[in-house]
Length: 309
Length: 250
Image 1 (tube, each protein chain N blue to C red):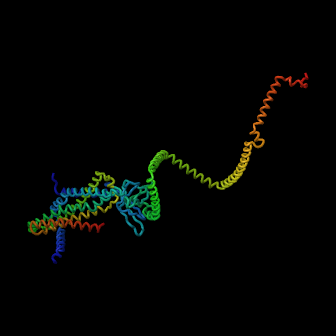
Image 2 (cartoon, rainbow over the protein chains, first blue to last red):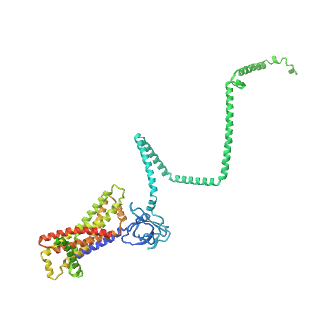
Image 3 (tube, chains in turn blue, orange):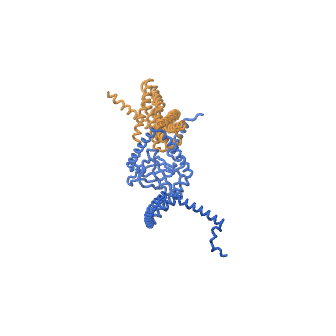
């Protein structure tokens, strides 16, 4: 099928224009056929934000930055950006610059306000947080951080040296590591399973600590008195204990004496002769009593008193 | 000695007078319209396949090599997309198209006009009362100016498509990552800068070829020389214009 030259030319030019429009909108991250609306935000510092950077709401691309203009008289930077028509940003939302230009690019993030608020109208101005940008904060704290990092590195190198020594000395480090890993896994599984419990336990601990604190602060006077009393009692207890010790020592020497057979008690405890005498006495007594039972007349003969009858 | 020093100035003057005369007759649409359409087909439509081929391979190679260069660094994968897409838009799509067309279109125009000059067809046109400049040169230059941007757009589309395709096929990075990276550092001016470049290149290539062909001297040898000079000088001036535009507009 032959087309005329005009048709060929017309077709290629129309195609090119369509590709251009669609392509530009595509790479600007705008929906290709639906429209978008414009919002404005005024920043103190945009940390390298530039036209074409994405606008993200909760991490989702919803539009692009259209222009970044320095307003020298107001010392602000006016950022105009487009948001897809079907994305409504509630009033009270905040726009902020996120990311570094060195790592993955700068973007305009929107922190949404309460969703009950009415949506922002096209062309309205969105709030921005005050204070220095992320990069500035980093720059300000840079020297401090550097020294910290330095000391950390120092420690690390020392630790590494020690570790290397350990490694050279023996292979039980590996075992230690293995068991450590085991412990970690166990801990993980435990903490994973018991996360809720742990959390409630920590909460309880917290409340207990808080209670304790309030209790001590409220009763600090009476607590002081109590502590003094306890102190006094403790000293007394100490004295008593000393006495007890002395008594025990005396008892000890007494018991020793008894043991060694000194004195009456000692004889009593250690000398069997009294026992023997007593024993033989009781045996004889026994015999006497039996004899008395068996032959009472032998002993009652002269007992005239009993002969009354 | 003076002649040799003056020769470049003479050439520049002749070139601009020729272009002035060509554009002075831009209103005589009827004289050149049918020629204009024909030239748009020859310069533009018929060049689409070779431009597409070159662009596809350029995009693919650029993607693979960028991935290779970045493979050991801490740079996220998406950066490949942010390098390939602007490179295609800003530079490669326009310059690759221009180089291919300097050979394909520039040589053709110079040879055509040169032969017409040597075989006295241009004189015959003049005798017939036709303005040979507006009849022969203007449609070619205009066709270049109109069709080069279209070719540039196709080159962009196909080059980026080629990069994307090879990235996905070779498992270098996913299409989503590629596009995300491209969008991250996308500047709205990029494609328009490429368009400005391609219009400039279209003008440079066709006008230099017309100039060389129109002022061909001698016989078949002269035609050969004009053709060579047209192709070489187009490339040189494309590079110079490339640099000048980059310095002036970015």
